Amino acid sequence: MEKDIVIGISDMKLSQKPGRLVTYALGSCVGICIHDNKRKISGLSHILLPEANLAGDGKKPIEIMKYANTAIPELIKRMEQLGASRLNMKAKIVGGAQMFQSMNNSMTGQIGQRNVQAVKEALRKEKIAIIAEDTGANYGRTVFMDVETGTVSVKTAFGKVKDI
Amino acid sequence: MEYGKFTELQMDVLREIGNIGSGNAATALSSMLQQPINISIPQVNMIKYNDLVEKLGGPETLIVGILLDVTGELEGTIMFLMKKEFTAQIISTLLFKEEVEFEALTEMDLSVIQEIGNILSASYVNSIAGLTGLRLDLSVPSLCVDMAGSIVSFPAIKYGEIGDNVLMIEGSFDDNSILETKIMLILENNSLDVLMTRLGVQ
Image 1 (tube, one colour):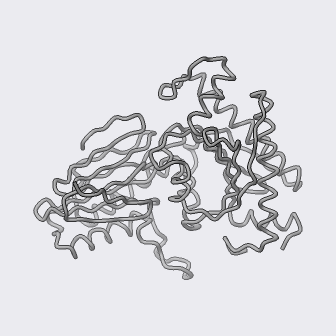
Image 2 (cartoon, rainbow over the protein chains, first blue to last red):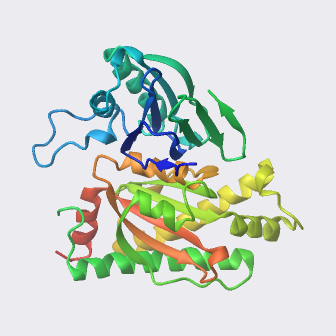
């Protein structure tokens, strides 16, 4: 079996070789899994924040893999470069939890929810359907994505694993 | 002040802040548990979140995180990260329990941990307030028992706009790695200026 390809925070990877894409312990972050079922190409992006200020401060380049609205178009572009077709792409999204309950009034407290909304919006703009999601609640999630089948397994801290 | 570019003198000041803060917190913990607690020399680090997670034993390691917002004349976050063995020891000491099931903590267990976070943070922040004469307030503690990666991503998000690196004044209790606890102070950019100015360091 191939070694797992691990994706860190504000990172993305894609593959067309049999194996798994893995991102550990999503909290309020969202993992976006996109799969082309004809070409058997999968990509996974781990975003931290909903939206980049596209104007920027002019000082440093925007870190495109950190934000939903910049990472998703980038992931799709890279998958297309590998030979995937947008028409075959389907998305599954995981994460966006609210880890700390008593912070729910602050902007940061609702960041999970805002991340999920931003991800949905960005996917809608790219006309990619979301066929499954496991988002919200208050616990962390680890995501395993099978490159060939696009099956996404979600594992939580207390050991439950489910496929979506 | 440019974030992350400090002079040696400024680093010393931050280290001393961490030293005083975690020293006081350790004293409070020690008197509650009625046993000695060692502290290490605080480190002032620009640390990447991915590296912090590795230090805690990997992203899927189960830990307890307690988070409090610091407001007032300084703005920032205090974060406690406790390994489960240490958490279990605190609960069993304070509640006179023989065994603590970490996977199924009771309401009472969680409440004890939250209160510990409250007391330790208060002693940490009070000592800084005393040193600097700044007025500082603390939010109520917020508790989370989950995978290290998920917990640490929370401050990563809060300070994500600043960059992937964040300045953490990091202190550890106990040199025994099982009981290691990290207490971290993360300050907003302009609060660092306020702190330095107040202490007369430019």
